[in-house]
Image (cartoon, rainbow, N blue to C red):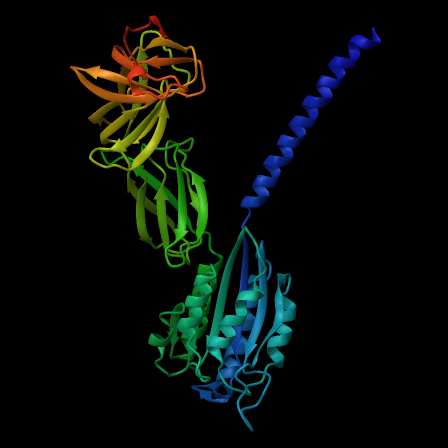
Length: 464
């Protein structure tokens, strides 16, 4: 009795562990999809921030408003913040320090109070090593698969150390680092064009607009920007689905997201959350693929990304008994030599509507051109049933099979020199096998046997 119970108990334990593993995997997947927003504030403390700006000193206005903004978002979930300064450590005299930047508060959760405290200690002192500072920011963001990284730079000037912020931005992109900062220009200087290559610039010439600009930037950084990819059928309706799609950074080429397209329970393309600070290139992995470039999103809004992708189906089957174990078909666009897909017989695959050419890897090969795939329809391609030939040789030797097409010899395949018995599936028709024993060194001893293959029948060829 005891032995009878052991196996069921062990089985239940194994099933329990499998279910537990699946549960943990699902939880891990949910956690992986959980997005953390990391914001690095760069505070310009160059000497020019001591200048008067309408009703107050630039530095004091910037401190007050930034502190208020940070205090307002301190309880936002899944938010980490950090603070870096430039021009805050060394005076302009006796000479400017073009490496004057420091990560004052590393990016972390619950750092609002520390950042507010450090902001109040900042004094306008040095120069503006903007390019160098941006280059240092790359290491402030530790590797993270599920993070949305944002830089907010508050400055009243332009590069003063001969650096090239545009070049730094290119170098970061080349390293696969996408850090396009929000730049808030404080004061009366019109230097918007300087920053176009670096990030998104907000020119604040009036003190009263500074807070509004900072609020907008924070809103764009934190707001949930959503999108749906509408895979449109021929009638302009988003009915196509169940295909993988990849979002790339248009600038760096870096892959950002992989998704499997889904129609939700309401019959609409499912909503996904995307980083609005990236210009995307979308590749929908239909056969063939569809690509859409220069996709920009409206931050904090629901965005619709339409893609034309009407599709139909291709099905390959054998007429009668299937003598093939795994017969493959090379599928190509009509009049294009590039292979799109390798599809196997007795399977069905989805393709964009249009015309296709096939190379069916039978012996001999079968070619079909200009076969049409229509929307929501299944195009069936029928392959003639093969016959079986068994070829035996007394001794090893080179041998080749040719199809006899009205007296013309068309090569089909070579046989294994060393094998004395081979079994092949051939399409119906008349064939020749040309063979010479390995040890015979005279051409006159070539053997030429002809044979016929009929669908579903077996043929034996003895080479003697």
